[in-house]
Image 1 (tube, rainbow, N blue to C red):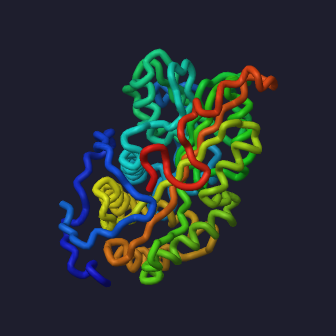
Image 2 (cartoon, helix red, strand yellow):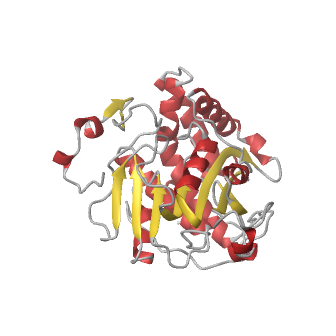
Image 3 (cartoon, rainbow, N blue to C red):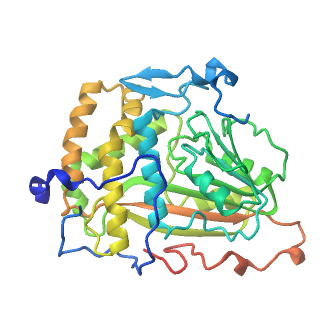
Length: 372
């Protein structure tokens, strides 16, 4: 289809496995993504000792050739095997590129306590521990899949973010959540827990993807298999009890929980290298690899558990979808939302800092100095 038929086998970018990558320089994007018509092919704290972890955590479950978490088995529909860990690290790189190398958009100055919920492979938490060496950084996840060689001020814990958090109220200067889509049953309750455990004056930041496909020129109509896949991902997640918010919903979650000065930053993530903007072309290149290699793990649990598909049926859809992914005449993208809110210092507005201290966020489009 389109250019996909002539795409060389070397289309996939070369990625160093499971290591953080260097962010690119800043470029000047625009809200409507410009198409590149002159394309050149692109080349409790776990200490690592398994004997200290109960079998309910490390006796993983296996299904359709993929490995899944054992602690509260079934709560999270995505695998935790090596292929998925590599994909999660690649996903981290995609967002690092998108945000110009920034790990957060909250205006942090000297945080002492940082919590990363759903830390995954722990890359973000490791980088934050390096950036703020005087802070205590805690990363939580259902799976003990994080590295053991980490900064001294970082610890990883096995915990379910949807259960009561094992911390005192008003504990954290900054709480971070990224890519929890498909993992959360009650998004409002999550925001409320974050509010409860943020210190007065502390920040909560949610960064998440809306998987629903979009395009500025309706070219996604040429991608019926990709559209079907994403439509069914959303439906299956709903049936699984994990509703998928619209990208503009997150701001309301924070406001209703009690956060103030809530800022919303909206981005577009191209699916492949069709974008003219150099930075977004790079983002799209890695997002293409992320999806080409990762859509099996993202979808097979949901399709077989929620929709009762046979694995063979899912693989047929995947094969047809992968052809569409590489077609540069399909200008598909997904919305990515970053929302930052501050917990009030008190009920007395006279003690509140001015709203401008949060920067130049927007409730509609773009990010300060970097709208797309």
